[in-house]
Amino acid sequence: PSSLLIKVIDQGRGIPSDKLESIFERFQQVDASDSRHKGGTGLGLAICRSILQQHEGQIWAESTLGTGSTFCFTLPILNTFEGSQTVILNSEFAAPTSNLRREPQSPLVLLCDDDASIRKVVRVMLERQGYQVLTVPSGQQAIEQARDHHPNVILLNLLMPDMNGWETLAVLKQQAETQTIPVIILSGLLPDAREAPYDGISDWIVKPPEPKVLQQALERALTSHDHPLKVLIVEDDLDLAQVLTTLFSRHPIETFHAQTGRDAIQLSQQVIPDLLVLDLGLPANDGFAVVDWLRQHNRLYRVPLIVYTARDLNDHERERLRLGQTLFLTKGRITPQEFEQRVINLLNRMIRGKTGDSLDDNQTNFDY
Image: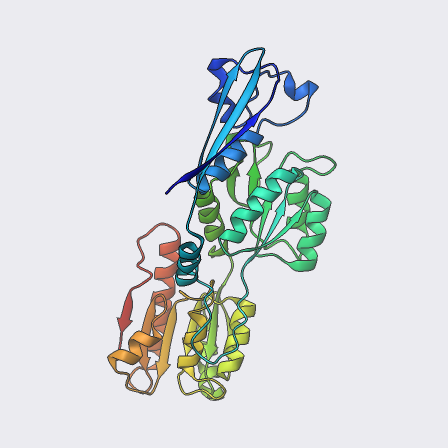
């Protein structure tokens, strides 16, 4: 596609030719004394390059000592109509085809950094990836907002005035309301420059962050299984639901129960289960409607699923019910002990997958 070229020209002291490339690296300035006399961290141009690369653009500098500098960057010119079509067709948040009233809840990320430019850049990255973002400039505000809003993940800078990142982290891990929230360090320091070891850190990202690195770190934090596994049982038969709950109570598993399809949709948003055990013949939205809704939710569309039903399902119905790891078990053809063993085996495979073993999210198992 065609490109738009923009030039920004100044009449300053100029930049030596051997510095024209290095000034776009992190923490680089033409003269190290600039950081003392004029302020700045040496991240501005690195951030600019990161933003432009995300949009398939380029940036470079031209300069003559004593005359001034010209900063040039390009951006591709896209066809607005075609681009809009692509976004609509590929969007994970397209309107559902079912009649369910959909209220998807994107993960909430709390970003704490005293640098306004970093907050702005990272916020754009996260929102483009489908996250809700809350930003604060200080550690004290991060503690208050984490307590009030309980975000899914916290991105925390270290070098901040008043209360630094380590002090903020210590308070977050001491308070009952915030101690289980994953914290990812987002800092200009490298991991081996840490002042002290902390077990409460989920990941470490060096600024300015690459979008893919940031996304992968967030996904790891959101799928961490340091907490007890959460299983949502969707079953209208209260006696059977109690039997299943008792089976799971022998393991480090936290169980939740929904008796109707509507309750299942509401509860799944609140607890974000690690596994869903689903009956199909439910009042107020059947199991098929529940799966249709889950497929539209950006955190639940690949939740491992056990379909536990008395129905004999044909191939079309099985395909319609498929989410992530999907296991089909038929009531009356499997004992409670066999059911328990199949579920525990699936959960163990999930945990191994999160810790490095291969796990195919699209695999579907059929049991009769």
